[in-house]
Amino acid sequence: MKINRLRLLGFKSFVEPTELIIEKGLTGVVGPNGCGKSNLLEALRWAMGETSYKSMRGSNMEDVIFAGSQSRPQRNSAEVTLFIDNSNRTAPAEFNDSDDLEVTRRIEREAGSAYRVNGRDVRARDVRLLFEDASTGARSPALVGQGRVGEIVSAQPQERRRVLEDAAGIAGLHSRRHEAELR
Ligand code: ATP
Ligand code: MG
Image (cartoon, rainbow, N blue to C red):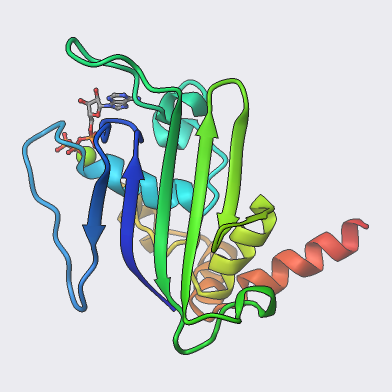
């Protein structure tokens, strides 16, 4: 699985529909302070199911919706879609009937978040497992935020094991086992 493209609608500073194409190899995003570079990465994490509004630098999850500016009114919803190449057919069985996956998270004021995969309503859990199985996700050590490099270097053995398990793509298995144990 590979994320090819990111589409943002009304997410944080991206009030105009915006697409980021992720080509093969290394992609760099450059721009002046405050232009939205971190917002782009937050959009990626958010669409993968991030539940912590604090880690999105907000005081509640609705803060990801465009808040308005001097020249534009605020929006009432935000939406981020990840376009995924699944031609190697490694997605979980329930999503593995297509070479292309579109994973969308949408939030509306006072209505909360909803997720869709290829237009079909799914649960947050399904999206979380989809990305955990692909060795990534909103909380995955595959996404190294500012200031986290040192944290990983000096991590305790158990935390370091989590990094390795995540890289091996078995985080989703752990989540499923944990759910089964709670039942
Ligand atoms: P730096 O180089 O300083 O790290 P950056 O390119 O990472 O900057 P971001 O932190 O992504 O910049 O963007 C911050 C901008 O996003 C600020 O101008 C802030 O006002 C704007 N912003 C954040 N949330 C919203 C929102 N809900 N509505 C409108 N604008 C927002
Ligand atoms: Mg930044």
